[in-house]
Image (tube, rainbow, N blue to C red; front, side, top):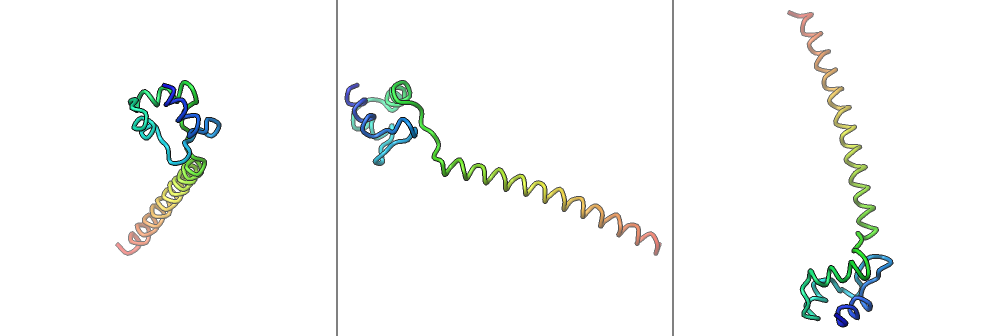
Length: 96
């Protein structure tokens, strides 16, 4: 377990919740001979959980905003189409 602790201490930023230097639970498991689940449990208990990168949070919010805009636009277009079809029917009735 000392090897796991040392590897986490050197390669995991607990404040940011991210690995440094290209390390991961898998890499530490491979280097120390401990299972990935064991490394993960030790990391969570001793150093904390992994956090999503800030850029990922920004992109997720952007996707949510775009989805909301799309749904609003889609609903507006449906209403405009409904209105246009109703006007077509009204005009067609004049010629029946």
